[in-house]
Image (cartoon, rainbow, N blue to C red; front, side, top):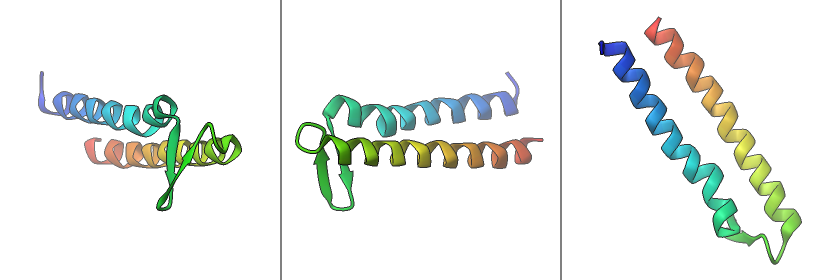
Length: 75
């Protein structure tokens, strides 16, 4: 493998690890932090899902921006 392919594969593995933590952990644990306070899916489902959607959307937007940045560097 040449240099750029290794860099891209490393970035993909790092992104998948972070995605599992950011997107998957709140679903498994049933709680998400909002500021300094945790919100539980059982106690306040509306606040949980609102925070979860916001967190996931923000993560995807940052991922897209980072992807364009990395693409412009590797090009």
